[in-house]
Length: 151
Image (tube, rainbow, N blue to C red):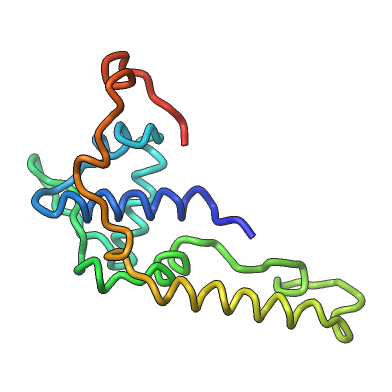
């Protein structure tokens, strides 16, 4: 199983917002810090705002901030809000045409594994991932050259 880059970026935005709890963050600065497309981060931030994880403040001095305390943001909730589906194999998805589905034992094993994955994520919150503002500084060489690195 592999999480999409969308979920990866969602965690990064939330971690960055949590580290900057003293002020609003912007899409532009977050994109620069992580070397990620501004357009893609806009979509991530919109989804996180709709999901109740971020709060958007409009206007000239606007930006983003956490909508709730870090200890109230469960990692499992973030993944469920940002992943398009959890169809690990065909038999988990709509339109399943696998001929052995009625007798197959793999589905049960994978369902159990997915449940364990979600249970583990639900035991942790954003507070467990907190970093300080200094942890997000641009490396000196990158900041001086203005180069971006893709994630």
